[in-house]
Amino acid sequence: MSEQPERILRFDIFRRIEHWTNAGSFITLGLTGLIQKYSEANLSQFILNVLGGIETVRIIHRISAILLVLVSIYHIGAFVYGFFVQRKPLSMIPTKEDLTNAWHSLKYNFGYEKHEPKQGFYTFEEKFEYWALIWGTVIMGITGFILWNPILSTKLLPSSFIPVAKAAHSGEALLAVLAVLIWHMYHVFIKHFNKSMYDGYVSREMMEHEHALVLEDENPWKPAPATDEDFQSRRKIFLGTFPLFAAILVVGLAFFVTAEETAVVTPAQIPDMVEVNSYSPIDPTTIPTSISVEPAEIGTSWEDGFGDLFQENCSLCHAQQGGQSNLNLTNYLSALEGGDSGPAIRPYAGGISLVVIWPARGDHPGKFTPGELAAIRQWIDNGAIEN
Image 1 (cartoon, rainbow, N blue to C red):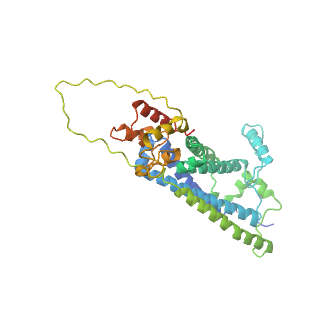
Image 2 (cartoon, rainbow, N blue to C red):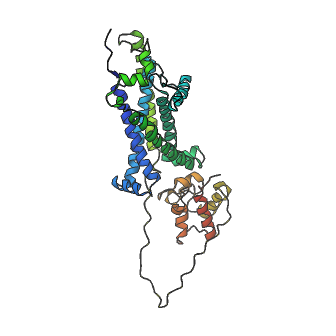
Image 3 (spheres, one colour):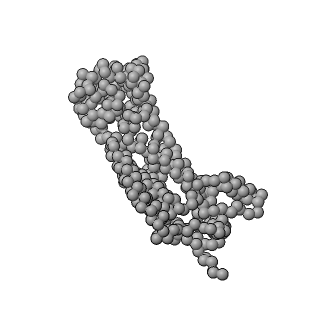
């Protein structure tokens, strides 16, 4: 009888490189994302300063996102190659046995069973974590595209999708980070120290404890020899199709990151007011109390009144053809896109929207009453709804 090896190969070098590349991009995305989400926290401020400020952090975040997408494309290729070419079993697909194992594991943890359930190459815990990663990557990718390209997104979707994407992106990110810190760290570091993603091997004792069904399998999967004709045929099909598919995905990724720069380039800061000498009376002037301006009743959306207001007051200079400063305020999307000075309307940010700033200065040709300006700012702060 042949001597059984003390260590068993679980993950080859390619799987380990993929894992650590994915882990590196995930950790970087989580760190740079959370310090933006909680930017007012002292720890966030410290990390932001160490990394070179918010601009550098945003660049790092986007580079890590690109790396995550590239790793995902590679993972698709590795999965298809393993399943189609090598005929590997789909051991990561959840089955009804996983539900049974989860139930028996719960009973074991509460002391109602003496032994843990025997599981295959992947346990139900690992499958749950894997599909949570897939789900999270899809959600983060879709919402990330919307936030990266807000103008393009609002041409295809209602503008209300922008705040929805922001909430989903940050919420899913927080959930993913907590899942890794609690679930993943427990299973690979606390429950037992699993070194298979370091050197690829696990001990026979751990395999018997965690993946007993693999050792008990009388007909385990084995890779086909390189001389096998069916294997060579499937490999040729894969090499003739997947590179084209991957190239299409890479082109899509390039479009993803270059479609627009609205969310990448930070608008130039408006200069502070210049301090000048002025007449100072002998007797101090009584400082008046602030008077809040009641917003005029214009409507609740662009189509409901604000579009007509801009058409009436601004179309002389900012018309559809040849508008001054390349700014067109005769339709909603053009107003969002803006002109030479940047977007004229920034949803949820009325205080830095040019349609509020410039008319309020007093020397601008376009005039609005205080009530109209208050209504415009209120509309923008509420999301600048189109219809």
